[in-house]
Length: 291
Image (cartoon, rainbow, N blue to C red; front, top):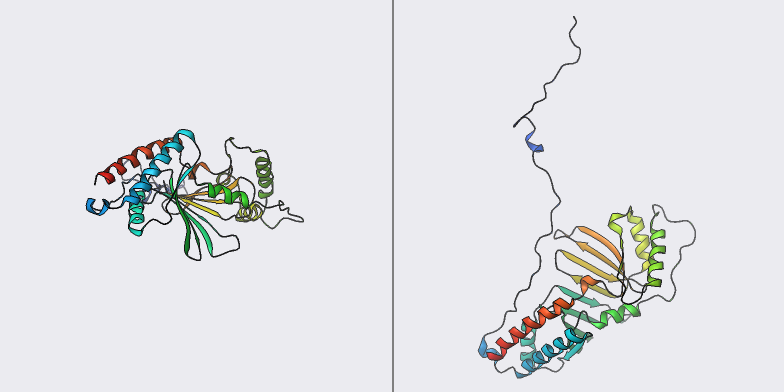
């Protein structure tokens, strides 16, 4: 009998028989640092007592929030003209929550609108400025400031852009998605659920994404939500059409979508949020006024 021409290598079994580096599995990093409610940091009681105008503005905000949560719609409290010390107390009580927004100027770089949610969901600070000068400063109470919806409505193109001729290289799926999105925004009506196109689950090339964004256009409204990871929301130039991109805490895109809706739900305070904020703001105001 001749020797077998191929050497036989024994395959190890049992603990310690496999390479050390293969023993651990590698997982995608999970989002970290979920934002939770943190009570505002308030000054010492003796510093609060004399801030009567701040007390009055906060009482009005609490009443307006109660009305908004019970009857719907938005209410507002004007802060323009408040003395600096009183305004500072209002700022300390409201704090900064997880949602902020910017409405870019429409051809006028000197004008801007900034929105910052308070630590109380559904309580918003809305400031308009011109050439660095504050023109209006209000606390708006409701699911989302009306100015964000109004700016998105104003951004709509008068005519839908159409591509003619051969498609650019590597663009394959974007044209059919654009047709689907157009069908949806044409039939969408207030009160309907959002129609979501999940680009993450589709075979989209980089060129497809660029083609899609070019034809949807980019509006003036930018919303950032820092809840579980981060979410960036921008309006398009199509009616009731938004680009919504979610990132984990390592700034890696985990969900890329187009939403057909008046305004994405992730940017709005729910009815339960308004109820909870009313209770928390009432408790903080009681402490402020007893100081």
